[in-house]
Length: 520
Image (cartoon, rainbow, N blue to C red; front, side, top):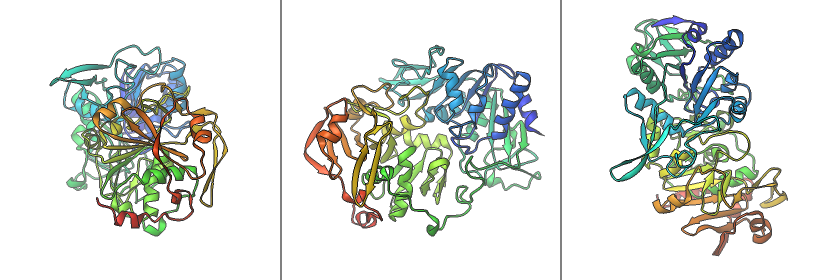
């Protein structure tokens, strides 16, 4: 094992190499100094070039930091990830056809890390059947330049499965908190563990190099063995970034690392607006004792609302990056959490999801069609991706898809218990057929999943015959405010209900009393 510099680390990357970068989303566990130096080196000398860049979760701040920095023509010939939406500059290159690009489910890529470590022929799973990654649809290809098939349908034990082919791995770059002089790694300040161990094993077992960014060094033999998550025998080079941040937004929080628990008095109450109304209504679908997942966007608020209502302890909230229990962070730090029970490795969390361990999940939607299909990843000209959406939605027993009813200039006011549509959005989200399928409604009906679609003014349920309108907000006219703004015509329930008025009122809803009287 070599202790070097970030320049030494980048020098190990050869032209044409397949480089896997660990970490998640907005800087969680991301070896940012490596990304900085890789981009700077290429701009200075034009090498390394023609790389295959891979990350399990999109890495970026929705601006210029992260994989957007690698949007340099010639640096990469192919990129693979679960979400390119927070890497807009790289997404622009993909849209222009400047490099090949694949979008695969987050849990699939996470599982591939472990399958590659074990020398398996790929990742075999039911996840993705009937969605856009099914090779009978797009196979995960994000532009016309991308032609190679890396997903295939196979039959095992009389059932169809998808086999995702393993990409090569020449270099794995991960992050830890502390390395000793032998390269043993601990993660005491990290908000997540992610895929770090599986990535290190995959690279080592396939003849690749393992590079690690750490915050600090320790003497040989000074780390407690029970704290070491990755043994030094797997590590080729360590470099120090003393300015390492937990996330792009947060320098360091002992609550995210699990070193301390946040005092309840320190939790800020979220303002009442249209997003909170939707998140509140989604929370009404949750039951005491549920094991849950909260998706990106509006659903991220559910954890803080549950804490406001005093019911977070009655639920087990999880985050796909490995946070089990507690309250998930939202906004720029989404992917972290605090007050959690355990911090798992990401492949294990997706094993739990893929096997149907979740009772309920609240996930975003961009489009919904007459069959109940959901599109969350391909709704405008910007390349995006589903993140963990497909894994989470495939086997979860109860699903709640959330979003505003329309988009593009929608203005809604919530004042004194009244919801008012100030200005309607230009873009319809309930369409005849979604652009691409992230969630297959027909398969969900066959599997017996319970599915609801929640907006600020209406709630729909998936039935064998398609969508059915089951609730509307107080004061909303069904024809004028709902049906007139849909390309499809849903059934209207004979027992159409009014949404709970507590959703639109300031102050707590009193869910603690509801949960206390509920049967788990």
